[in-house]
Length: 193
Image (cartoon, rainbow, N blue to C red; front, side):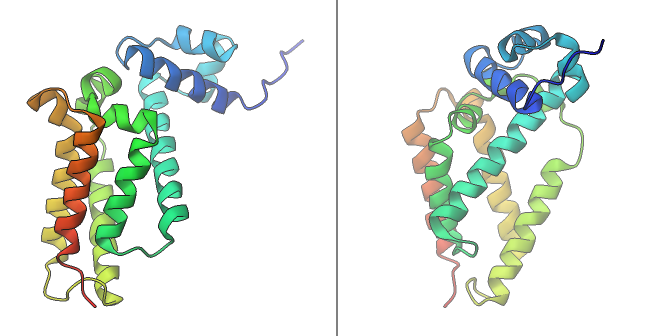
């Protein structure tokens, strides 16, 4: 007789994985520990996710969705550029997983962050370019600003923050918030209207 499906299995797996990655870091987390934390068998984890990296991808996507929702709820669908960065900093610091990912990429993200080989970062960058062009069309970003160059600067700064703790030494949440706020203030200098 087949086992009954576990209600909310995917979310239970992600919840258990998030707890473990925050406690141990990605590299020390195992699928067996995730299964135990979720109260399911290891095979059930593999029914939802092909491997451990796929679980972290799903965690980061879920965290990003939480951040985006938090920002939208705070400032609406069409925020100004500087306002969006400052709201993002507040949302980031309210989310333990995303804060930890920025403050300690080796522990939380482990080797995963340097092993990502798909085009996700490029896709996100192109999304920033599109957003900046939309701001220009709405008159909220100066027309003479090169949207591609500004997007590259902002994307590079954000990606750089992911490795800042490893390269520059430990960062505090206050330092992270200040850095993101500073990016927002710099970006706000290009706002139009």
